[in-house]
Every structure is written in C-alpha cells, then in structure tokens.
Length: 182
Image 1: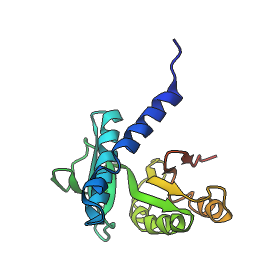
Image 2: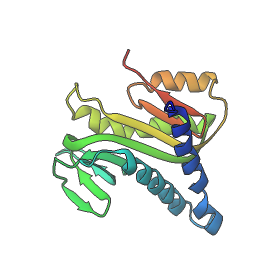
Image 3: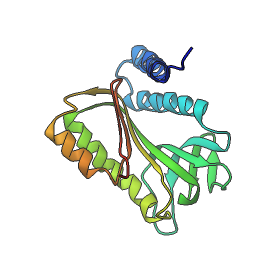
Image 4: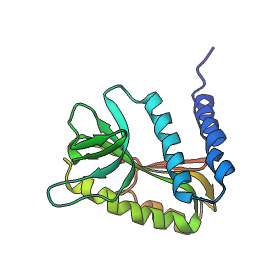
C-alpha cells in the first residue's frame, strides 16, 4: 500500500482542530490570554512528537549582551548548547542554539495578517542580526483560524514584503505558505 503523506498531514490538522477550542468552550471569554497560552501548548505538544531528541520546544526570550527579544510564543532550540535560564518550558537563551521561532495566533483575517507579520518582525530582528548568514532558521506564523481572502492584494503584498521575516505560514486548516530561497 502506498504511503499517503497528504492524508497523514490532514490527520494532524484535524487533531489540532479538534482540541483548539476546549478551553474557550469551558471558560468562554473570561480570559483570552489563557486561551492563547493553551493554544501555544497544543502546538508545542504536536511539534515535540516530530522533532529529534536533541531539539526542544519552549517559550520565552532570546537575548544578547545588548538586546532582548519580545516574549516569543514558541522557541525551537538545540539541547547541545546550554540555555541561560530554564524553568519548565520557559527559557531564556542566546541566538546560538535557536533553530526557529513561531508566533501563534488564535485567528487571523486579511486585515490582522499584516499587523501580525509586522509585530513578528521585532522578534526576528535579534536573531537575524546575531546568527551566521548560512544558518537557515525556521520563522513561523501559525494561526488556528483564518477568515478572509488569501488571494487579496494586501495578503500578496504582505507576503512579498515578509520573505525576510517569516518563511513558514500556516493559516487555518487550508493554507500553508513556504518561502523558498529561490
């Protein structure tokens, strides 16, 4: 029987979709921050299933001697390089062991997409200024839901402008965008 990669990927999407609103269903709009944190945990749990043992997933900050990132939803890092600080999955690290970062959103639409990319740029700056040019890092934007027109001019323009900022974008169940170097 041939391997069905598409169906495998769809099953992961369906798994994420099935659990994404559990906290909202129980607490409603009582605390959006905790619902957002729950969604970050869902994605981190899924990533851990597929990453090699020497790679971990956390949340926190990336710092240098002169700068510090904003709080980053997901930091993917190499365990072979020591962290500056670690408590549970909260970390503070330098750019030297970071393999990627992901900004997690509950819902994006055509108008909030550009705002999210621009906000994400602030978190990416510290990495791009402090890593070797040949290191290919994973810069992701993940939204559990997307409403809007993926083919709109503003989305196209934002995607073109964001190639140096975000190289992997997942919008809801139906859209995955990967920026290739060439």
